[in-house]
Length: 231
Image 1 (tube, rainbow, N blue to C red):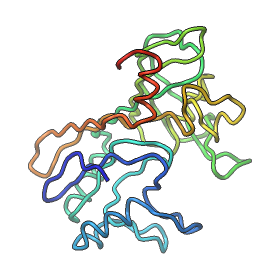
Image 2: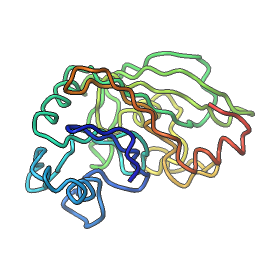
Image 3: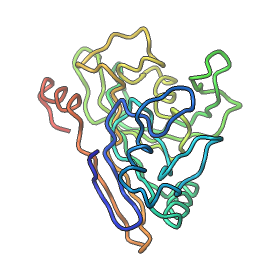
Image 4: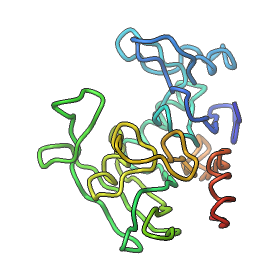
């Protein structure tokens, strides 16, 4: 596990795609929380349970197939401190993604409520009676023939699958998203969701503003090289 930042209270990792943040109670697979409890056994009691599921160190989540920056708390004080920043929308989260099609607007805001899908328990949908969800975006690069757009997304809220649902709702789902774009061809060499948590900003317990950038994983780097551009 690549550690990007660490102090006595907090650690930020670059989570690889394909690794769940914590177990779901239905399947047995390796997780970030399992790695954390092994790496920091003195912090195994830090965190909040989800039913009977232990979640040592976990303050927030990113999807299994999403790579990138993830904050973990080593002390109960840090857990409460970071959690409060998330609740107050004080954490800066920046994601980079390839989406299908040509996004015409250079930048904008997606303000669509999100709720659970009534037909598929795994999914969320944008609908009027959902929870408030706000995502800012900016186009970083457009591909040829309207095939793809490379975007930066800044979710102000933290709904489950927020970025995936929001971009699907505006008809630009994320490349290789098997759940929200199952009928789209996989392009640019991606075999998993083309979404990376690029940067996260927060305050540590000393009150210092910390900004952590997660290096791009191999599949993103390969796509950049193939497309001959550097973000």
